[in-house]
Length: 591
Ligand code: OXD
Ligand code: MN
Image 1 (cartoon, rainbow, N blue to C red):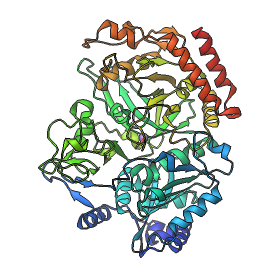
Image 2: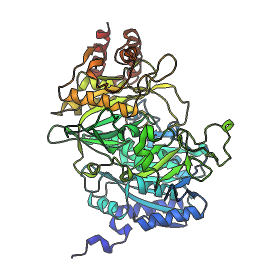
Image 3: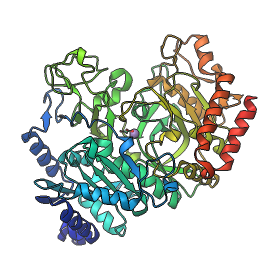
């Protein structure tokens, strides 16, 4: 057998461009040593054991949670920091009112000051990574430099790292995203997450938290990729991808955009209710979706990630049995609590009790939740019982429907379908949701979050909507677009819809709509199922509740569209007139 040309080369030699950049960063940050990650199992184990020896990782109960570890972050560093996250384009208008902005030269100067000498006494890790299957034309690569071994371990789970990724980087002509990260001194006053989409680079300082520090994820696969996708004619979205096999054996894939901590992971791993025998659900992805127009006029999607960084609280056999099972081994937990027998514990895990809270104190309910509300699990996708090999298909999977949704106590009905792609873009643009603990700030406040991309669109939302419109217009067989709200509440604050596995009933209606096999009522905001259009077998839902879930309050919707117009007007002349025209049509239909 011939020797592969690269097996004889050292890692820095495989990509001279990566080697040169590492030299430059080494000169600036002055680490004690440089370590190139090869992505091997041995490397992972060695790093993990080193962190255990340093007391930074705690092994959990080896009988009940084998291969599981607890990491406690700095208590001031537990979530994404949107107010410290910037998109640094040459012109402020290109970042748009939806992003914080600083001129690139000023941002780079500020970051240079922070990175100067920041790795003294530390190891500089170089992580070549590939977002997406190694052999997919849709995948894109990056190199993250970090001084955090926890980041290396997490990136090894969440992406495809090491030797093979670097070989692909060299094959692709070295067009990789450069991500520089240091935990710095974790001082929130010296914390910034800067994006430079025009030169495909990211600089993140002062945080070790996943969304701020695992640069392949939000920074690359959403902010930088969305910018790149617009230039290249594809979409990088904050969406899960799930395959649904009906009792006739046909599988359709849908993608769904919900804001952070609004149930993407649960929907991606849904377990069909007993009343729906013969249905099977396959997870392709739970957070990020890259979609390309295919030669057949459909949209084809890949999941750029290889693992899940999921919210632990609320996970139990009823809400997400697949997730509950998959995190019982080989999982990295962050900021969860512990039981007396050293198992991880979080609110909503009903089968045990907390003994030690996430801050390592004996548990006392007076101190608040035992696990941090944004405590997480990091786990390989292949551990998910509903994992499908389709997630590795270099061609991706064809998307039949795209779903938008948010967490809204009132107003938005259980589900509605857009009248057309153009109307659907307005439906996506109208997403609003109550804020969650995934980002620092007040929780439970309704905010506008178009396509669930408010924290992640790497450019002006006006241009983003235009891109959606133009891309859809070119598709011969575009997916149908829907909006859902699993979170409607009654007067007493009780959820009106059971959610979780029963959401499959709503998905079934959508797939039937795609096949022209389900009815609906036409309303001013789109098509809503009539109660008889939904499969409600085995579900004892009060008819009045069902009516509330499948109807609209016209007066409240009039107020909503007025508010939406005010929001969209913020984007001025970047806003595509066609979309404002769609809004006018909704207004006219509402009368
Ligand atoms: C996430 C988020 O971690 O959206 O996925 O915050
Ligand atoms: Mn997310």
